Amino acid sequence: MPLSLSRRAARTVQSEIRAMSIACEKVQGINLAQGICDTEVPLPVREGAKQAMDQGINSYTRAEGLAPIRQAIAEKMQRFNGVACDPETEVVVSSGATGAFYAACLALLNPGDEVILFEPYYGYHLNTLIAAEAVPLCVTLRAPDWTFNREDLERTVTLRTRAIVLNSPANPSGKVFTREELEWIASFAKRHDLFVFTDEIYEYFVFEGHHISMATLPGMRERTITMSGYSKTFSITGWRIGYTICDRRWAQGIAYFQDLIYVCAPAPLQIGVAEGIRQLPESFYAEIGKEYVVKRDMLCAVLKEIGLTPSVPNGAYYVLADGSILPGRTSRDKAMYLLQQTGVATVAGSAFYHGNGGENLIRFCFAKTDAELTEACRRLNNLPEKLRAGTLAANTRE
Image (cartoon, rainbow, N blue to C red; front, side, top):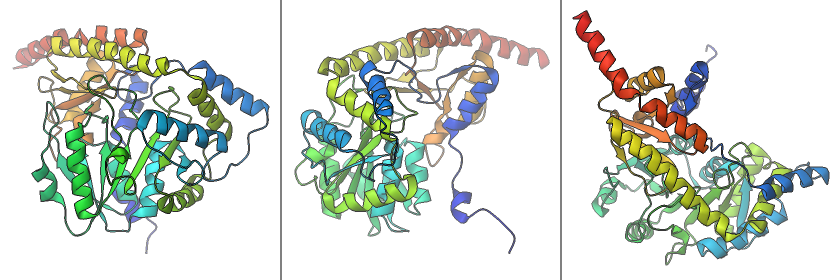
């Protein structure tokens, strides 16, 4: 038998987000593709990590993470999310929220188990399920408000369905699920005896409505696997500090796979995050929403002006826009055209759908410094002229 990649590897493709970031680097463009979040890291977070290094906190930690961060997360979960958890047995610090999801999938899903995703979905959720040999099932949210109804869920579930993934606020749509929708999902999960994996990484990035953790709903604490982290909130996407909150029956298995795959999250960076949680006032988190709604409105106004009609997000820091006016057969063609003509990198909408539902959509990320976002908007404002020039050139050739 000749050497080859595994069947698992053959089913898993490079993230379109990563591919567009590479293409952006080649043209030295502005990257509105990847949620890098290059705003300033809060001082207590930076200083906490430095002090931890100076104090020699540079070795392996236990799989669940260091005690200070587990305690800080447990206090924050009670204070902000309304979820009580034992820092000793129900908190697992992980290598980012993506690491939390992968470890949870390995601990709680068997090969062939079905898992429901809402689409447009985050590509890492889909590919993590595939890597864990689960079977994704998609429920499509309807633009521009990204709605669904109970019948959408009931048509999808089978006897093999084991879990449902909920990302709220959502990447890429910016949808913030309402209490009524969460209650539908909770009732559905209890009726079909499903786990609910919740990715709450954007919990502080809410512009309309407010964030509700699924684990607070009646009867949902034991079956909800709450995953989040501080990559976005503290602008430390490269630090890879996430966490899982769940019933102690599931936490031990999740910690085992966290240890097996990642060993531990970086020790001094755990302390940096713990200090950020401990020291930063509530006003810091309130300012996030205010700051990012200004960025959102700036970008959405430009997109509307140039004919890339946006679905204005209620949360997170992404905008899905209608790219119908852009040349190209596929959304990737359209995203590449935009990069070539304006130097602004985006993500093709097809990266977030299992079918062809995203072929006229383009995702923009506005987690940028004010200066960089302003420059990106300036470049995008030149798009109508570029499109007109392209039309004239095509007519000349004819």
